[in-house]
Image 1 (cartoon, rainbow, N blue to C red):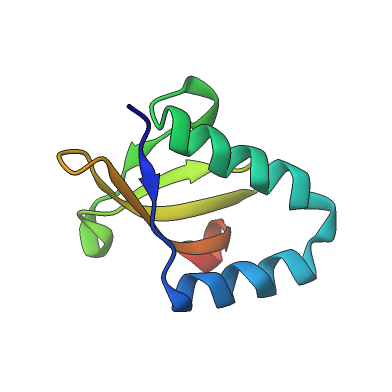
Image 2: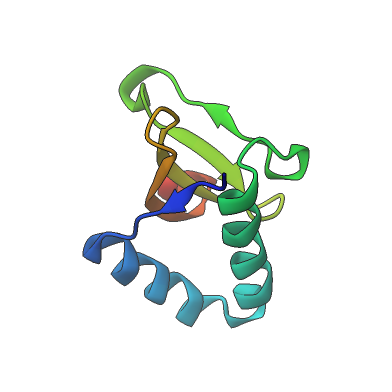
Length: 91
């Protein structure tokens, strides 16, 4: 069973701003979300847990420069994106 992506209004606004600044990443961003929903543990996403002030949050890669941070609720099969941007913006 695939995971369910749950988009908050706050995240949707961040994603729209991100894609407006980086229209060349639109296809890659959509592919990342589709893969995340199908299999969040796929190696190309480089899923990893964060620590410190971001404990409880995970990160996946859109490419080498850009990330999506998210809450990953494995027991409920839900993924809630929190932020999208370059390394400094999301951490």
